[in-house]
Image 1 (tube, rainbow, N blue to C red):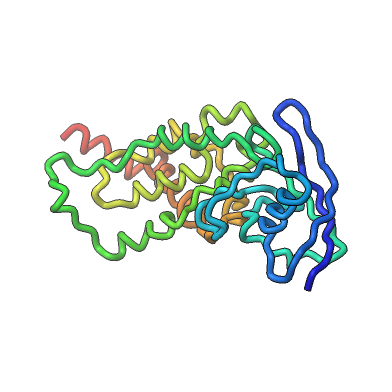
Image 2 (cartoon, rainbow, N blue to C red):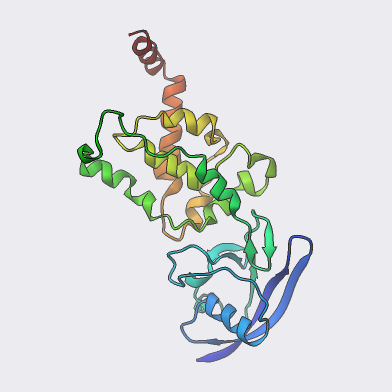
Length: 249
């Protein structure tokens, strides 16, 4: 089945831009990215759009479709009615480079600020051992394709530019939580999460979980457990007393 669909696509750069109207042919079984490629081939050859795998595994084609942050390659045209206008805009949280391409370098800066896995100094790489239950605890987080939809939708950075300096966002707080769950990691990730990466800014609205294309339960399985560990460390009197005794020893 073939039909003509109405599209509104944001065109412009960081200085000026707006929505442009297009009518594009849609074939049965296609996704939004297919239609965007047809639009490039037939009407707007200079349309800038970022994509790579077209299989929902690279996270490159992130955009906002009818106001919802999604992957264009995983959004089927069949979810829209034939008379519905499909609006495609760039990720709102990050600066626009051109058209649908945004500058997501903020995320790479935050990634570099997360200290790497740090095993005990006297433990040789060949001696690393983990129980299966420890592997399974953090395996979910390794499914992340770094589409940055969770970063885009998090209102702490989306609505407050001033927070970007002190808040790493759900993707990298999830990375810290993953490292803290490793039984051989020796760093105090709780202190880092709270004092250096802004864990306290998160108010667990679960918007990051709602847009994750890999269905990672970011809030329930990473952010809330990390918040609980931070609270135990800071406010639990027994934990506080234990830390004082250990330090004196």
